[in-house]
Length: 101
Image (cartoon, one colour):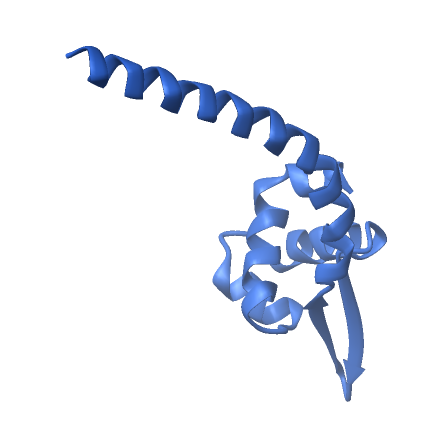
């Protein structure tokens, strides 16, 4: 999943799908990527479980699967705690510096 998220074009696709479902043509129009490239990105995102597809007549409509991002969010949580601790320490040092002035 992280490998799928590593590509900026795939992240751009997810950002569009976050707002609304779209077909490959709409995504290609919104991105500086040819339609075959968009289709490859969609296939990788689908294989990673980040998007789902449904058939509407002749079109495939892609939607974001936000629940798939829970795993990434849980993994990032440990890093968030680390940074929060460091930012709290920085805030304390800044406050001490202001108090000394």
